[in-house]
Length: 402
Image (cartoon, rainbow, N blue to C red):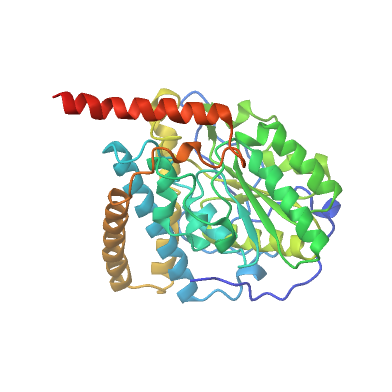
């Protein structure tokens, strides 16, 4: 299901006039730790279209960007989030069973990813980090291809140009520069397309991200910087990363920033459509801060109980993005129990397919690591290949001796 904007394209305000925009609908956050205070009334509000209780709220600025959404579209967004969460849960289980070396969960961030991912057009280009499983789903990447790198059988698993979805980037923040350079090329080509760079709150402190902001602003690049602020850069809370809300950083670079409720799929869809419309119409970059929460561990090697309390997690579970949309669907009579039952069956079958696909992945050629290092070969690589071959042969000799 691809949700395309039905709102007519129209001129927007300049970057200077839009900087620091917030929409209506008061956003709330849970406590960060048991020793920290709740959000103050003077804190920035979120652009919010669906409350945690599943009630639709009006927003004069962004309602137009979801005005044409149908009940079928809403069910499609819900399905996207449910299947993405099921895939993520299966990947965690596979890692615990020794089938994957590592896995970075997106639990709690489904609305930010599905909403923004469904706002993109086919000709837009996306530069992800390593956690954008929901965006990959929206771009048509086979979910099982995401698992090859974490199983150690390939370096990515898909052709980025097939879906305009770049390979996962492990180096923190570097994809912001890649996206900016690509967007500058798009502008020079005169193409009517936008670019989206995803990164987390921790990556916003990286020099690469600041440099990307500078270049994109100076060259008016058609790029949307989509920051998923999930509150924790591994074990560091956001307030140790920035003295101001992250979206306000855009002001210093000369382009607009907006904070959106990252657990509200409709708001994420609307705000990203707006930002991409700006980019495509030549108005330059935008920073979108999706204010969300990582409900699980940073990766499967992390233990979040060592640095945050249960009260915080429970407060954010009450704002669960999937439950929020389900409440709206039920209250609006846009989905019946048969829809949810059928989706549950599809979800379980999907999990089984993912599990079987991972276990069927062939092991890589042991000597492939030496290929494609130098175009014309290299004496040192040849020497290392020979040493590795002798090492591998030693196992065969040992087995033969027994």
